[in-house]
Length: 548
Ligand SMILES: CCCCCCCCCCCCC/C=C/[C@@H](O)[C@@H](N)CO[C@@H]1O[C@H](CO)[C@H](O)[C@H](O)[C@H]1O
Image (cartoon, rainbow, N blue to C red; front, side):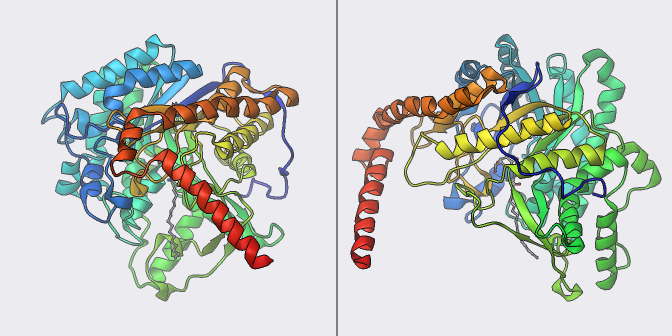
């Protein structure tokens, strides 16, 4: 982190201007979050199918069994993308949909192959570039049961076989590949906290082991592509790393500055540093090594790359996919060795948030736009200004009332994309931006209770109809202007978007199935909204009376 100056890069005001010509605008999704069809057409089980079916793992015990029914509705969804005039669509391939047991040698499910093939063809016919993620968390369950999933080194070879099959079948049409989505979450939430599938709590070691195999698997796939496919297919292989920005509580306090650097190195650097520089960040080796020693272990809990492995993993990123949502303030905090093994304790820091930061949805997601520019500049300084695609950025809502007039999301996109524009002006080599996500979807352990979509999905209706939120119109204007051309124009966008969303609200309220369900048992949108307004009025009057 020595090259990044925390005192520079001021939190300045809004910047009017446009992105370079050819800048790519897209939206993202992932297989388990949107496809549904969990046991259809020969698909095998994934760790998420099994995890979500266990009681108590997911909010309200929801599952992704049918989700948005994207498997059946992809043509409709591509029409939505066409209307938005998107340049790219990021989606993931479900490994067990095309290899039900995980292994190519056992069975290739041609129906699964056909689904992705048709999706890719239709995208290309619609002039939308497919950006394909190979692993967005849905490991074939068989591989978890037989080998322990990412805890086992054999996963490197199996993932490579799966990737190779994808290159063989889709690589003539797909030119942008992402090996892994957010390996931090796979490792920490899957193997440390157990909040995500496979739900293991192997604290202080499991996450490091999983990450080690993921890094090697990424590198192997990059080499396979490089040796076997690149000259014919002329595509690029990247990885999508998600990271928060960590800001020192006090920039003039060296201990805080170092703690913030550690926060980022334990987040982004854990994966990016081996892939760009051939080894784990020095600070991770130092902290985990020292704490392992104090815990009486003979070796560090952080695995070690051999010299051959270092040169094998180094330089295996054609582009860096960057997912970013939020920021934390960071300060130094010592965790004594008696505290026990833990990824979190290894970092010796505390995370803080400013209560003034807007927090419309997910508990962890505060809107802090300036952190985005800093993170992008940090990547530029640390990793030699690599080619970057922003692969995820967006905000959720968690509300009782369904409101398609998502003012806070428009605000979030406006400010975050503006910080991205400033970073591009700083010289950060960003080629594209992907809003997360096209549709509301299955939000992992939070089930359907958190909505990230530009389109609202009515999950109560079997047909899963989609309704545009105001942010669709807003994002469309950013896309058609390739940025923020002038104050006068940008200021009118929100107003215009809100004009359209009130009619969409009426459309949603008039949905016959919603109306029907309202008569039966379900609590539905219009009823809940009316109730909300009434209750707020009563509560307000109560407060007023108490004051008087
Ligand atoms: C000793 C101290 C103990 C402290 C314990 C703290 C436990 C903290 C648990 C960490 C929770 C972090 C949650 C953050 C998650 C995001 O980074 C992650 N959700 C981003 O992944 C993408 O999210 C999208 C929207 O949520 C979307 O779902 C997408 O598929 C994901 O890639």
